Length: 222
Ligand SMILES: [Zn+2]
Ligand SMILES: [Zn+2]
Image (tube, protein in one colour):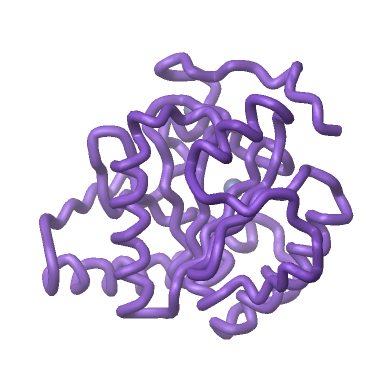
């Protein structure tokens, strides 16, 4: 279904029911900029699984305005530098609203080197060259999911066969490439098993910040 008509506009500054607005499902913030948070995923698939989250409530990145693009790009570049130094190049992934569990925009960052996706698989709909392409798709079609590696960024229509094709190949390959558990686990299991992974990632992030850069910002929220 490519109908965006029932996509609610979520641009209010804050949503009382949203676990990302309330920050109850954000376990550890690595970095905070005026409009974004860089946070550990609280139920990581592998070590290094982090999220880029706009502070304001948007339902997906298709709704995030152009004025925030530069800040988003510099956050992504920092993740790329961090991953390249300690893990492997980044693969970025967004559900859009399709298959989302938290209805607040977030970009998953995974150190998987590459997606392994071949354009000849023809599961994608658009080769993305700017954030405008994502906004454009969202405005015209509504839901989507999104994947980016060092080669290219792609938008996929929110159809189950495309989604399962990507999850099966890209995710399993990516998780296996980091020695992660490829069998299905509930979010609760990932949460429980994720504690040492998050700790280890935070240690690496701290030395990354000390080695390089602007500032260390550690805020333990719970
Ligand atoms: Zn929210
Ligand atoms: Zn997600």
